[in-house]
Length: 301
Length: 260
Picture 1 (tube, rainbow over the protein chains, first blue to last red):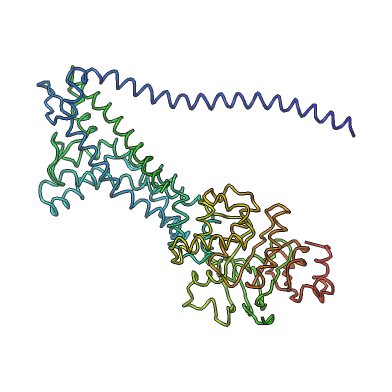
Picture 2: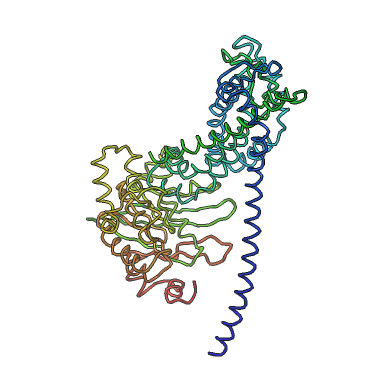
């Protein structure tokens, strides 16, 4: 009995040795994967910075960021209108799209019958895979004429851009929020219901707070898609390098000016486009930071 | 007061999960200010039956209830019944403790808040009173702002009891409330049940027969004799009688541990 136990414990320790090595190798591999992801980010950032920073040294950071005069051929590199454009369409798209998407996610996970859910959810996910140029077509054919009829002007401008982007980010935000909401344990819902809470009280007070982190992640990803989106925005925005005076005036974004000028830019002009890329990266990062800080302070309250 | 008033009366209840016929022809009267235990082997439908009493099964799609259940004589499955108001009167404790991911205070204040109490002093009083009644106040009074999830399993379950008591229900349904917690906490919860019975009507599902014998005044025995047949109520009587002199052979076999 005792000897048997000892033999068992020896083979047990051998087994553990073997397991420990396997564990270490696995840790190493996973660490390496994480490094590659981070390294990619660092390299891209460094590359864009190296190529773009010289223009800030040459034209002046303040000058570039505060001027709207974009005449690269004449050596004037004011990019404020693009920053405003990107900022405006992203914020507009989020304001329109995020509530819609979270609403859709709540409907899908809390209210829809299994049958409705089994049809609508794949449809929403499919929507996330549609190429952005197709959304651009939709914008040009459907949204722009409606905006023109309602607000006057050409219809190509901020409002159309926000609407098209909002439609584009809804599936991303909805699909990820829906996962977050569905993974809230059923016990929370039942516990709340068992105290006489209505379904809406349960959703508002228990389910949404419990799914908060996941919903914030979803909004961050949607935001990332909005701020970086180029093609669809390019097609409906009108692309004038000015700060739009009104909601249906043409505008440009950081992404749209890069794609429009890149094919022929050279010298300082090209460097300036890299500079714009750098600003885009920083803008995108500050959006992520802003959303995180906003959601954290709301939790604290 | 009157030990023989039926607080809840169930007549000829059938229950289906989709195509599965789970409960057949259950009739039982639950007495006020007493503790009634439902016993039976796992999967015999006693939890399902318990969840019919506050319409918790409504939350599960494709379930069907037939028959009649009354609370103080009123049909709880009548079309005009508001399930939220019903569940406020018939609270429930679940098998796995399920405190919300919020502070201990907010957990207990949750119910009163959704029912419209916003006054801070009033909430403070309810929280203290409920935690005291659930025998948890001494352990948590200094840390009401810490997360309810930071408590031990047994403490979490008492927090859930406090949370339900805070909305002042008339009936407490307990679905195997002690199956996931440590023995010391079980002792506390059983003592608690004994105390709560003077003010509430308690129904407990348990597959621990000693527990049923300890805490209950009345016991109902459920059994599905074949896996594909619905469960039925085999015997329902005073707990003392059930455990000393059951009238049905199957009850006797189960209680003496011959199956289940």
